[in-house]
Length: 230
Image (cartoon, rainbow, N blue to C red; front, side, top):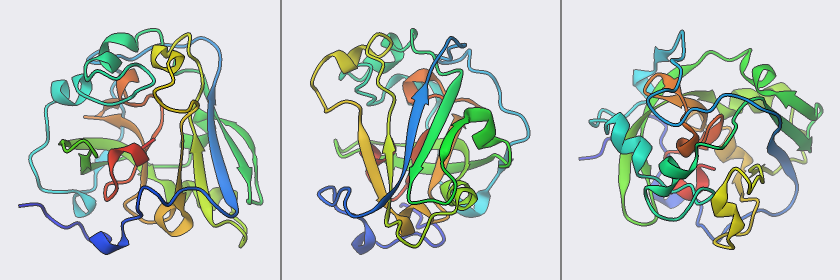
């Protein structure tokens, strides 16, 4: 039996896949450059000072680290379930920068360290559901997206938050094929983005995110299908 999380939206509140990006947006584009360390699995560095947020976590049994890091759907690395783990070793997640643009009082390009510095990291255990009819229970490490958005002061004209991934086909071999339109773009309504369950994850199982799981920074929206967790 699945546990409904506190303040969890009802099924009727889930945004249909067909509802996409429209009207005005506060856009967070994620761009990386330069040379950095890679994290492809068990070698991922531990994250210090992480506290468990049991109130906003499911009580379901979590999947193993091996399950989570070897069976996933980052098409940027390939479409087979094992492709991301096997083909993500050349991806360089650091150094990394995030571009904030659109309907906000503060915009610009910021390093990952600038983005993370004010935020305390916490563990949230969420079930990630895929539209392909599989799911996993994952102990994410991250912080609320809403806290980040407040720092950049969205204006009253902001209606959506759009997210755009990096485009580096030399490091992400799946981007060499037209499986999806690259770079991949997703969006949330402002109320969805500000919801306390919506987080930006930087790790899982107390370690930095492996490349195949979205390193170094990914969105996690537990009441939506996984394709939203860009």
